[in-house]
Amino acid sequence: MAEKLIGQVTHYFDKLGVAVLKLKGTIKVGDTLRFEGGEINFEQTMDSMQIDRKPVNKAKKGDDVGMKVNEKVRPGYRVFLVK
Image 1 (cartoon, one colour):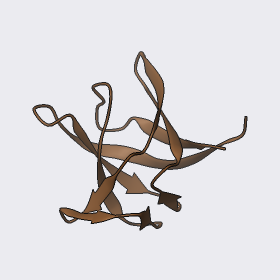
Image 2: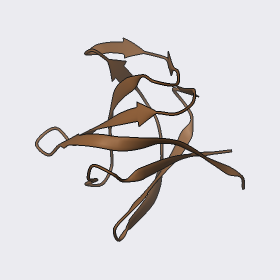
Image 3: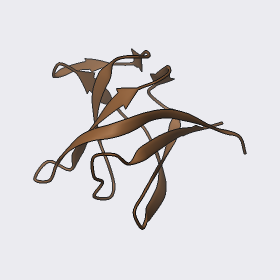
Image 4: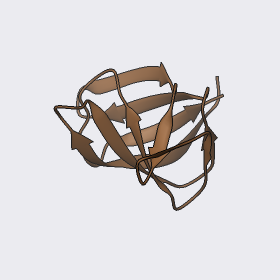
């Protein structure tokens, strides 16, 4: 399975379980992402994402997107698009 570095976690909202990602490429709802950092390494399908608190189906390089994550992540964790 090929993977592509797609972004990095810039913020994590603990109470909401939401991560903010700074993108280096394009992603869309339904994509599978893998989070890696520290001892964390997990995959999840992106069910939804938001830009400026508005739901979007697609985001591009340079966007900051918020998405609910299944595990706690930290700023600096790398995010890969699993193909």
